Length: 218
Image 1: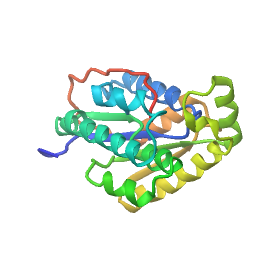
Image 2: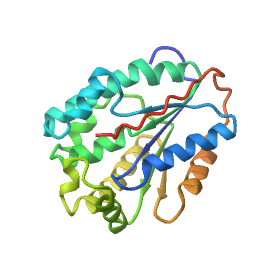
Image 3: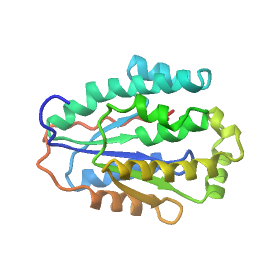
Image 4: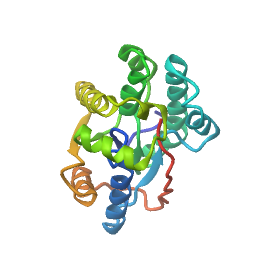
């Protein structure tokens, strides 16, 4: 990172079908009411590299996809996250490193390889991991419909929940504050409030313009 990091970086991850997008939207609405501007970003990004990653995630597998996701993340860090943190902004990323540690492992990529190729990305100040009962997650996916190939595995929800638990442990070992919240036991508004309470009030930049996106992560 160039310059001193004076902002605050929050990442929000969780299994497909856990209600992450609804929670992220509720969080930004709550922060706006509290007059706490936040830069909203998402992975994969909407750059050419991010769009390619998102649109080809069902065709590219394993190590190749893991490297592509990492490349898009480094671009994200260099062009959006680090400059915003240097400017003193609150940055909230819808999906980040934890999603890679889970989804790419489901794709057969060794954990150690994923850690190595993401070793130089910026770590969050707060990593939020949303979880829920695997049965509830499977029910939500069934109602919503299959959107990527990981949904085709009936054991996917339970494996994702377990792997996100392991990802949380890894982040803690790296000195990251981790907040694990059960998105099946509370409403999105309640979960958003708990996340907002964990974010300190900082002298953030006053000219941040949230840029909502709805692209699904890889």
